[in-house]
Image (cartoon, rainbow, N blue to C red; front, side):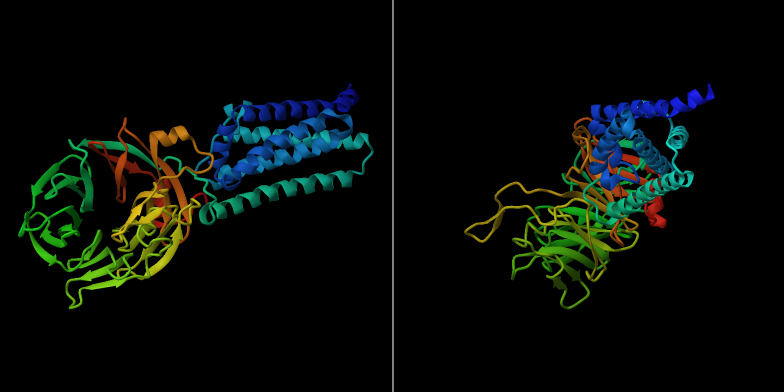
Length: 502
């Protein structure tokens, strides 16, 4: 009886694997898009999701075919053994070297937890190895030969998965081929406040207070505590109204608030808590973006009167020659105006200035003298601005076709750039893109992609602006300000800067 069971055991194991692999392959094929998305979110195989999604299904079906034929059953068992070792090592790495785990690969094992999944795989390895030993003995094969072969296959399988893990991590963080990795539980909504209008924008934050400006009432500064409980406002009184204002805005940098319109151009400064704001600059420099560096010094973006290109500069009110332009900082690709368009922001924790281009996958970090410290890139592949520009008879440049916008809005905090992307990556759901904005997070002190997260719409309203503090992520959306509590998958990067999943 024992000999009879031993004789049939390899065949029983072979047909078990046939059933397992065929079922698994078909379940993946029936929901192939979901299978690709799951692989793309894998902490270990993100960079190879496209190739592996096809390879795993093909390999499973080939092995199943080998197991069904007597003459190829033994190679099929060796292949089954190697594949199950690979799956087991993959799960081990997931459980021990990852901060989160992706969804299962589908099929009947989708109902198992990852620990149970690993136990099942180990049992399958034992079955495959037992069947190999019995079949090799029946064929009179030297014991040392098949044990060495089994060991070699096991080592190769382990090495292959570890290699994919290491190289995928490198590609995802430094040479990404536009595959997003969505962070697990980066934040959770915990508070909101109705502002009564959708015309607010973030003017700054300091000392547990958030400051809001309003496009429709530009001289009103609104203060909200970070708990979103109390709200106060005051109307600033400027010392001169005799200007043809076009776009008045406010910024707060403790202990002052600044009111400005670069089209005039004029800058007012007032102390927080006081209504009166005095003119500190008039006709010193035209600008379309400005960041206060201290009480009398500003980083500006303007247009060169010589080249007509966009340039960055420093406006220093304490110097005799108040304006110094740095024409080499913004890189021209086509026209020098639209191709270099972007947003200049300041990291309030480090004081560094960042500039992110709207129409290409580049951003850079600068110091207070606008010296470029490093040039970095986002994970999409648009290296050159895809725009069409026409020059009119009066010399003005106009867009002749809608541009391909790469980066929509951004904010920086503690050496992280939170960038709202406008492009869909590989293996992403179109449905999710219609329901949410996607924010990609990058290190600003080195080339590294940290991860991404969704900010879901509220009805028809979409996020209009972001603000980040040590504990919270705030957004303006519709008539509301919404607060999200940040979780360690994001906040740990503020202090340690360690790469995710390491």
